[in-house]
Length: 396
Image (cartoon, rainbow, N blue to C red; front, side, top):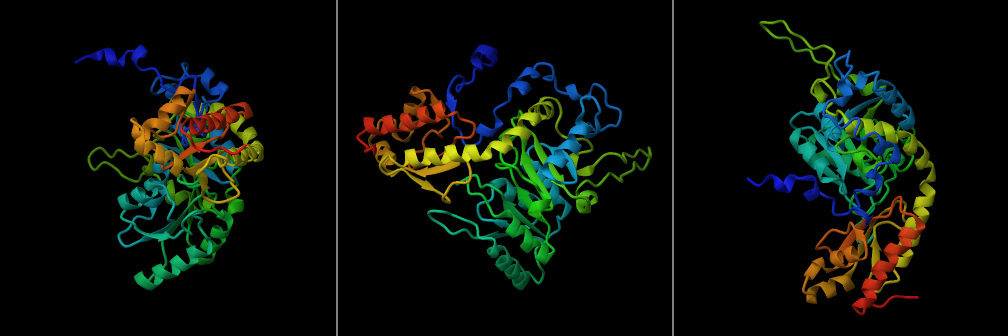
């Protein structure tokens, strides 16, 4: 066994010092305040030095209990728990409604973990279709149509509905409130998966008429992975945050303060939780600057589309910084290039830019959230330079 591969000098991050435009990483870049406390809280159970209640979410020092209340206020929901990522949060909600034959309706742009969470909980899935190429939009009224289809085919309406706030494929922003109204009319609880939304843009749960709000701390809240946020309202607290009732038949042991869906105690300790707290003041401020981020994203799209063959996929005008471009001209180059589809990745890397998935040339995704105007221009110029190098036209 060669253990040298695990030495610090051999675990250096490839993207260090580069402009990172990876679609799932821009909103997870740590704030300076979060970086300051990394070593202090790096030990596994570091948050548990003074635990009097037997639950991490009730800690007074560090002030997790206060943070939970502040976070609920910020998201305009009633109660919060921390989870092992957004996918765990989805599983927790679906578990509360898990029963063979029950149906969940979700949008056809939902993240794969939404499907997996449903499958793990024996929920049948019905999809709300999207409009297809080139915008792939979800129309709210289609939720009502699918609800009626479920009733016709199963004899009862769905148990749950899920809407993806910002889809991970095209960066489309859903009309949450309209879907919320439809779900209220049908009395079907609505899960909003805001893994690419909350933490970057302002999200006020009750105003959007949602029942469960799911966030990703490491995608959009500048926290270390893995950490998710599950927020709900008082009507559902006892459903999803149910406490343990089990008792040992011989010992009589019981764990009445422990919550079942979180394995008794929050599954998140140490750095993910503390960095989420440390970045919170910055997050509260930065959501107010979302319009500036959209301005940058739209400029980026205009400049990229000056390259022959490059076209934005998804809704227009853009309402998010996650961008998906089709790029048939780059794909033509890849067919002849000795590095094949990897040529674009390597060309960008030589120019100090990383994040476009290796091997992707027919289409590719980027995220420009948080980039300065100077960095944006550097990225655009890199793409244009690559295009011109291989004889692709670029408009002035």
